[in-house]
Amino acid sequence: MYFNIFNTPNIQKMEEKIKNFLDLVKERNGHEAEFIQAVEEVAETVIPYIVKHDIYHGKNILLRMVEPERVITFRVNWVDDTGEIQVNRGYRVQMNSAIGPYKGGLRFHPTVTMSILKFLAFEQVFKNSLTTLPMGGGKGGSDFDPKGKSDNEIMRFCHAFMSELFRHIGPNTDIPAGDIGVGGREIGFLFGMYKKLKNEFTGVLTGKGMTWGGSLIRPEATGYGNVYFAEKMLQSNGDSFKGKTVVISGSGNVAQYAAEKTNQLGGKVITLSDSSGYIVDPDGINESKLAFVMELKNIKRGRISEYVVKYPSAKFVANKTPWEVKCDVALPCATQNELHGKDADLLLKNGCICVSEGANMPSTKEAIYKFHKAKILFAPGKASNAGGVATSGLEMTQNSLRYNWTRAEVDEKLKDIMSNIHDACIKYGKDEKTGYIDYVKGANIAGFVKVADAMLAQGVV
Ligand code: NDP
Image (spheres, rainbow, N blue to C red):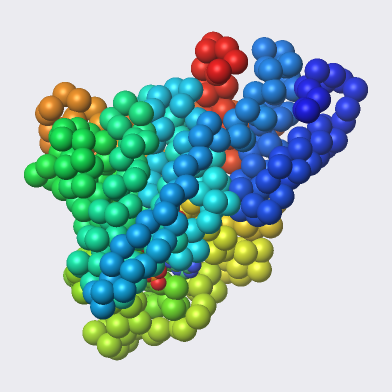
């Protein structure tokens, strides 16, 4: 049914080729807005590269990459604390296994749909390729909302979810991890049920507890990795985090450790947020204030607005995002499409010089266009938040070796990986005339080449 849009590289104009490709993708997935958005961003940078490289012509390689290898949806029944039976929907999108077993997180959030998971799985393929580790891409989750649920309800849901998912995953097949709404507590419950059903103790999930197969630095890795990446970008301009004012969105796993590492590198973090609004603390969210936030969010499962009760000199701004606060560096670490064109305008007007995504696709297409136009440093999540999955890859290696590396060893490997990703972005994204580094282009092409070449080598499978 598909004509090959790369067979006649010189006849069609590039914009037409991209449009034709996207029309095909929309025809099949038109109702999946987030997935289309993620594909558009990749197509616009990768198609011109494909056109210039004969080995990819006539292979429909990008069309193959936008089609998941397998999608699983399933019913999840569980009983709440009042004895009522609840029904949720579970998913696993196994997107691409050309360079390794499927790998990617599980998200539990009421907004989870097939479109969200396909966009995340698609991005994951490129991200995992960038880490240099042998991991394919996948993503999964459920529309289950963990907010307000008791520990017992969370356990029953996780057990019910795994009682179906276990059939489709395994340490050499598909290795899920955490994402929004899935942290150490949930991974524990999921792992327990997998182990019981399969009667084997394997590295089938990452983000495990330290005493049962987890890796040191895994909880910190996404946030730390994002800051290591941003530091590399700043260094490429002869600059650093020292003395910089930093705004961060979110207050979950990624945001907390991005804040911790920013403080360690001499930056001053002044905001955090959740879905109810943001707090701004002009004195800086230092180590002890951050310890309060971690206890509030991870143990008490409270709201970020409670920060101002403890620290009255800070302010809570309801139902808004922190991009209106003046800063040098912005780290969006909450969720997709949380930073719009008008937010980019505000950041630029206030002198922001660097945006590094901790979340997946937090900036809209319009916002990215504005950052590029203003020639500021901008890192897409598939490069800058790859530290999490990279350290999951290191957890898999340690599980296979039945050995644990020290904190310093894992941190060193994480730093090296983030530095290598930065180099790969320069290789494919630097404009030789102006010197400007387009990290979106760099990350997309570097991620594409490795997966595409493996697919070519393996034939039509
Ligand atoms: P958490 O669940 O730990 O935290 C998510 C944070 O984002 C919370 O503060 C949450 O607030 C906020 N948030 C969620 N949805 C919205 C929304 N619609 N509007 C505003 N705020 C929102 O998740 P993580 O920190 O793990 O993940 C954050 C982002 O980082 C996601 O995009 C995820 O895909 C990405 N990521 C995570 C990795 C990891 O290792 N954990 C790896 C790579 C990427 P509230 O409590 O109010 O919901």
